[in-house]
Image (cartoon, rainbow over all chains, first blue to last red; front, side):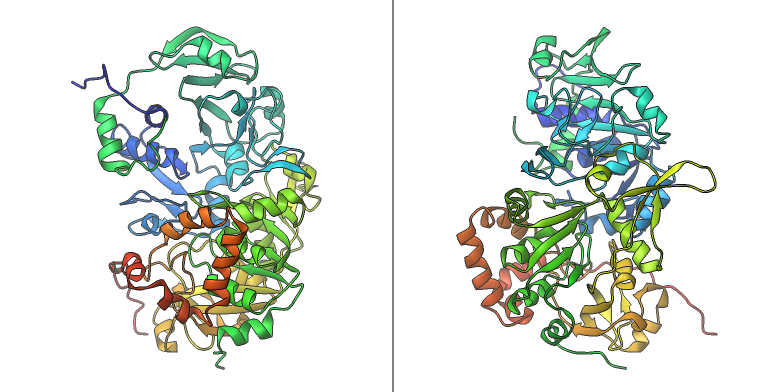
Length: 260
Length: 300
């Protein structure tokens, strides 16, 4: 039996394990570097051995033998099932509907799960210029399910984002539905405090807390009056086996998992 | 017809002040040597287009080559911010035009295919469309629903690094092939830089691997290690240490100037640059071979 009590882990490890658990065996996942990459590899090594990893650089069925620093690392190519160009990855795979899961990140996530990865402040005269969409605008629109991994801080969770790089539920679920966009939108936001999920109207509400975390912490660190689900769950404790895999095999140098 | 020339000659002949330049490569095969040669030759007012401007455009912007940037993701991949580009944009000193990756590659695809625009499905996120007048909508004549469109991107010069090419410009590429083919077919002039110049027979032994045919190529340059600090699949690894170091260097304008003086202006070509990196770096970036199984085309 796995021992789970009295384990020490970082916020990144906590989010990574909880993100991995959202993946289902056989899922086709559009993977980003960092925590999503680790979460996918963890899932593949535990409950989802048939996970298919697709990278936006155009690699299908990657089997990276080392932790890639960048989205286009050569280790993704060696031993992969297929490699294609950018136009193909965004059309044949994403636009056509061949991607089950996309992982998204951004500087701001708002009440309806819309994401800003473009600018803080005014677009023409930005206070902070962020990297921009990359592949995320289309992923948020067209992947069947989207997941977001982000630390729970007030500045990251404003009531409204400064720029809508990627669509969540816009101003409510009916507005997203009316666009006819094929993907299901953000289904879960994994933070270091718990899980947020959209309600019937597409508004993110607190549905689960990690062991030891409190509703007050979540409220203090969210930029709107966040609602709490009627039945608030507690996420399953982190297992020692999951931590060993992460620390000893998937990120042995602690590049993504160290800290907080 | 042989199109072999030095990189210096190719840049002199095909890259002019005010041109739109696309140095291809999604993380892989980024032709850094060409960027450095453009800096050495002092080109100005360029419009630099790349999905991911990467360090190559950070350096070219720092050296004063650029008037405008066309992009879809400005970051130091795997590290963080692309500091010089970012501060120039924040200060309003650099013009820009922004897309998603899919919008960017669709522009190239339209240019490569000779189409007036390419339609894309809606994503429900409309802010990029709001701020970029090049992103528009038309009614699909079959269903009546709206689709998003982007116009062709047709750079004056496309620069593409490849594993091997013959002297005429037929080029083999493997590994991540991001947007090389689309850049080649959409650009008015194509410069190929190659790790190896090989006999035409080698190219003809594996025609499926030829992404770029000679008929669209203007110049072929033999430039081993052209992609450092990015990489060439099977030839040398990505220099992640340099990508991390650039994050520090690019914090300080004086350090950037020193770096350009030492590593761009201070060397005459890629060979000198590569030797200057030294044997420790060479050893760190060396790759063990892993060959594909041969394919049988049949002797007909």
